Length: 472
Image 1 (cartoon, one colour):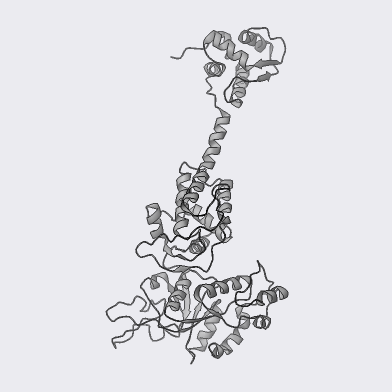
Image 2: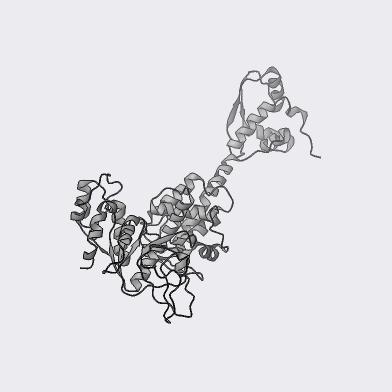
């Protein structure tokens, strides 16, 4: 049993005084430095405190030197003042300054580790920000591919200067996302490895990954990047900072951010709308996964003289949606097709309603956003020797998308000059940051001067009428 405190310390009668002494010590890293003042002493407290300090206390306010108390207590009990407070009251004193230092270290630790990781793993990085800023773009890292991962080129949304890393890490620190658990450092380093595997720190095209394959390779579990996991949360915050968008609020917004990193969440959600595109013939021994009533792309054709696959009769006149599931079969397209890439599905619909023409034009629609499936379809068409022309909206997002298609796939713009812009009707004001058109130095100036967006639907009749001019 612990030895009880002696009566002259008056634990019960001086509880308020002992609390003041304990608070003062906690503020001073438990060291007996400085003086504290205790006011409002009662007559009983003054008499009791006289025993403690060894001299009469006559006023309602007293000033106590902690060093004097420590010396007196050591001389009479062999214990310092901090030990006596615990002995008398049972209160375990805490070094508040040390607590604050530990809390700061806990919050800063993951970011220090991130800075070290970036300095080690990314050539040309520096460590001057809140955790791991990078002074210039790091070398692109493909990270390899697990078996079965889709192999699309991802370059339509070029990586920003890696200043986004500063913004991402600063937001993580500010919001306290990484202070809720002891695994914060591991989570952040794993997130950095995921980003590296996606090529997020480089400016060049990366390779697309199936999310489950990427998760298995980097986290050790195919579910390691599922929605709700800590690593996925941190990675998506990086994707939002990188693309300059808000944090995701829905499953579709999360999927778009993953796609911005070149990550395919699943193989059926994202699609590419196409019309009148002919696939390359498939060997008779193969089982074409693109054939049949459930067709979501174009029909596969037989080369052995047998009947066409079910649903192939109208495959070149009915719009279809291709998915990663379809593309994973290894489908390729007939060589040297003529393809118009448009931005809005109404354009594809109107041309499809008109039916196949002598120009044998096929269409790919980006639906206003070139997702990974769209990019892979375009990549495979270019590989097959297809000639691509592009038409989109005359707004800043449309110019950015056109620039990307031209740069990534060599598409040539069609009816996308200043005269075409002025010839279209529009009433909606232009919004967002102006973007120069890579194919025409005068277009952006014309758009800024007029200040009105002209969407594809506004020039639909002209587009349809002028289709014969597309390759004339």
